[in-house]
Length: 139
Image 1 (cartoon, one colour):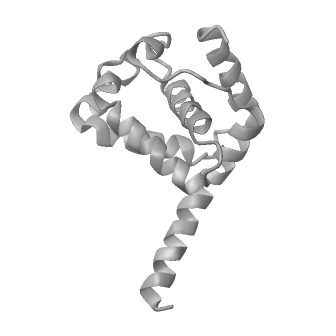
Image 2 (image 1 turned 60 degrees about the vertical axis):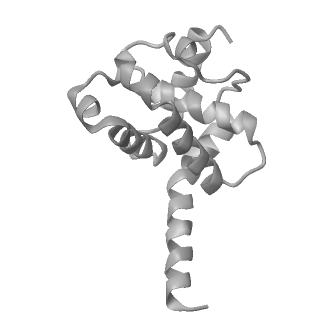
């Protein structure tokens, strides 16, 4: 294996590890969402709902692709966020100037930070958010 392949594999491993903790929390405590994410579904969430929106997008993709790797799942989720770009940019949770000016790239950057699980993310906060999502969606 040449040096470039080793570097590319290391970058893939790093990307996977970034999302692994989130994926583990989600597999233990996440919602089971059997409906597609749509404008109507997103309208159930208020202006402070960015994290909840990212959670339900992840939930939809976990349900649709239950046996894929964390790395592949994260790629599919980011693609879904891209495809929902127009809907997300019109949603009240993303009305902040930085999203309106930065567009879908700014939303994807925010999503990446969300799924990367920084020190503010705890299992308790995650569980509470999942309970709020279930309540919002009457699950």
